[in-house]
Image 1 (cartoon, one colour):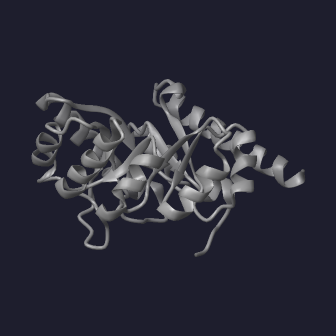
Image 2: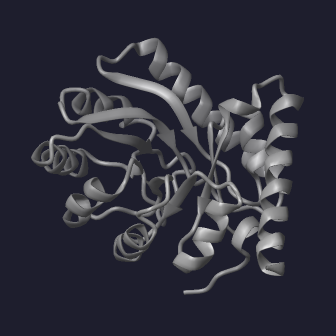
Amino acid sequence: MEEFCNLKDKLKGISERIRNAAESCGRNPESIRLVAVSKIVSADKVREAIDAGVTILGENYIREAGEKISALSDCRVSWHFIGHLQTNKAKYAVKLFDLIHTADSLKLAIELNRQAAKINKIQNILIQVNIGEEESKSGISVQDLQTLLREIGRLDNLSVKGLMTIPPFYDEPEKVRPFFSALRELRDQIKRAAIPNISMDELSMGMSGDFETAIAEGATLVRIGTAIFGERTL
C-alpha cells in the first residue's frame, strides 16, 4: 500500500510539473499527455500506475509488451510503441499498439501499411527524426523527411500524426532545448508544405530529465519512465 501511495505521489508531482510548465509558456495543460514508459516494469506495477491515473503506456519491446497488454486487457488504456521497430515485428506492433512513435523508413512504413490492411486497421504513427544526426540513433534525417512523408501519404492504412525525436543526451535540459526547438520548427515547415494525408498534430519529445523544456518547445507527448517507476536495468 505504501508503494502504491508513493507511485500515486510521483504521478501527482509529475502532473503538477506538466501543468506548471504548460502554463508558464501560455499553453493549455490539457494539450500535453503523459506517456508512462513501462519497459521492464511488471504488469502488477503497471496496473498500480493505471489505478493511480495513468492512461497511456509506452513500451519498447514487442514480446514484453504483448505479455503485458494481454495481462492488462481489462484496463482501459492506450498503448504506444516507443522503441526501435524492426520490419519483421511490424505485424505484431500493428496488432498491439494504438500509436507507433518510431516509424523511420519507407520500408517499415510499407510493411506497417500491409499488416494494418490485413486487419482492416488505420495505424497511427509518428515519424522518428534523428534531429541530432547521431550515428548511434535511429530516425530519418531532416533532409529526407519530406520525401518520406510524401511517400507515406500515399499509403491507405497509415495515418501520420506528427514527429518524434530522441535528442543527444545532456545532463542540463537547456542544452537539449535547441533540438526540441528544431523539431518544432520542422513540424511547422511540414504544416506549411501541406503534404496530402499528413497531419502534424503531435510532437513526442522530452523524458524524465528534460520534459519541462520539451513542453516549452511544443511537446504534446512526453515520455516519462524513471521519474515514475525508478531506475531500471536490463
